[in-house]
Image (cartoon, rainbow, N blue to C red; front, side):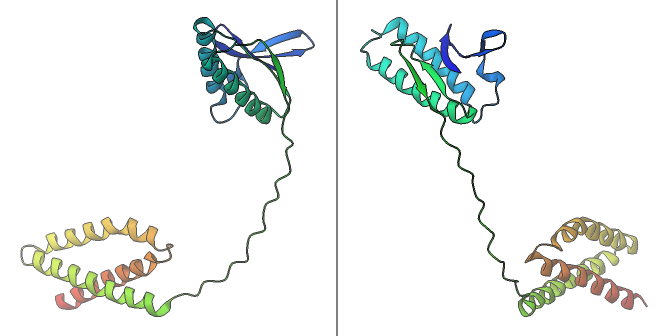
Length: 198
């Protein structure tokens, strides 16, 4: 495979059964924006060749160095040697593909089983249950003075609004204790409201 500049675009030339073919780097499975970088380099190279004295200009040296870097990346991505024709000097270099060493995945460290913090968790649940019970009872009694139906509607809306969050939080390590407290608080508040109505 050979990296060339043709009309301000980077092309990759190679031989197959039909002869020599040139392809656009965008048609190949190159990673991390390499095809765009190749085309950008080719545009700069063409502009430098037209304006700068090619043999010894500083811009020409930068184009040459960037071309070698891109050829190295291309060789690594494709896993094959890449011939690089310098657009400034016309010299050709061959960049070998780096050896790909098999990557050994480290064995995961054995996980220590986490102990459930029952004391702290239950304290959070009790506190949350107390706050939720107080809020639901206060809301229901306040609205119940106006209309029983309004109090019932408010309870349904409050519980319906927090139910999805509580359902999702039940599996999160810390927030599960809050979720348990919210459920217990709503149930306690409803039990208290039903006993006050009887």
